Image (tube, one colour):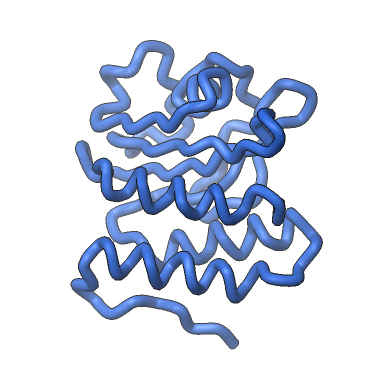
Amino acid sequence: MYDFRPAAGTPKPELYRQLHDAAEALTTGERDGVANMANIAALLWEFLDEVNWTGFYRNVGGELVLGPFVGRPACIRIPFGTGVCGAAAESRTTQLVRDVHAFPGHIACDGDTKSELVVPVIRDGEVVAVIDLDSPVEGRFDEEDAAGIERLAAMLLDRI
């Protein structure tokens, strides 16, 4: 059994260092991308407070398709350019949304979600997936969170 949970009150830089180390330990040598995404979704759930969904959408033929996640049932397919996840995939840039209700075209898979962070995983210039984090707290995510998840995405690019 693995227990990677950080201590309560761990400062963000240390929390993301520990998260990265745990992700590295779980995915090193594992070739199955779905297994790796599943473990990372679970790690994100364990490491991050005030989240109600952590997981992945995969690029399948230019459309985002639900991948491994922790949380309530979610939208299955999202076109590039639609919602926060689709915007991240189309622009190939991180989307840090403090208030999802103010985001044009937001897709409300869970009505409790108030803020969202979506980071694309890019391999050879193509988006292979996005990491999606939702929170019921407005303004939950900041630039430090974005940087931590971007570092995680860079590590995962050849593991998913």
